[in-house]
Length: 312
Picture 1: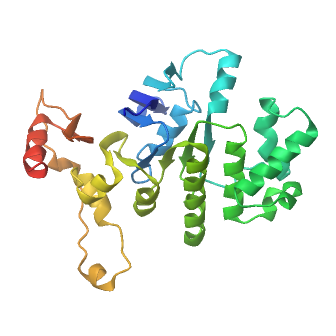
Picture 2 (picture 1 turned 90 degrees about the vertical axis):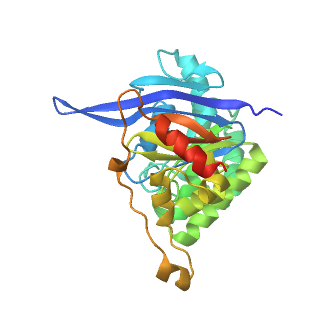
Picture 3 (picture 1 turned 120 degrees about the horizontal axis):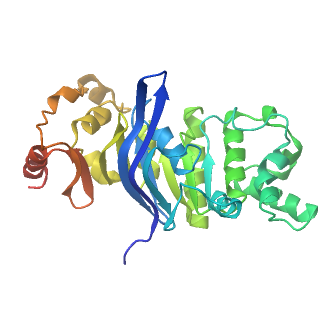
């Protein structure tokens, strides 16, 4: 049975002008698909362009180049208010900072119901509040929390409120932009487990952006690795962790600590040096399928080396 593509990203570019002559290529020609009901994890070090990718997909930034299709419809370009309204309902975002992403002057009920009000999803004040109560309980809070303000909650609770706000309009796709990085480790697991539970119950599709590789493996079906605005590797989660091909991915995975003193004493961290890639004119790196479903950014010469080494 063929999977249904929900999101198609083709050669997406997001460049920013810094000063008069400098251009930062935050996202520089990346391509990937996300299938309905799956979680695609996007990882990489700080500044690699993963959050900019998420913000470009949801139109917080107008893309410099490339194409983003959601449900077969181009996301960018001129759109009517009605089209934007439909798009904004189907695609939502959970932000990194649960402190800054909630309006401190609004009660939790109004924060969650903002999308309900904009899209006219409640016929009466009673129905609106019942929907708010239902959403609070869905994310593990209770109806008494509706009349409080964001500053009265912990970081984990605020992120749950952010999830409830995203769910309020019944979206198909949620971009989670480092949703656990500002939380304590014990709370991180609770939030990720909540997201997995909601995905199973509501058939949600996620783009999960993070730099915590162990947590990304836990929630993701497939994982893409970014480095300096480029997607350098993409594969199923288990395949990527067990058989990383690109040297940068290998370096990232070698940095993951394990709760094993014997392993930690002997663990060798690999270092990635971009200079190790010797590209020649006419053999520039491209995103190539080294193994079925396992894509790597490499030259033709590297592609042959990787195939010989990793497919036998």
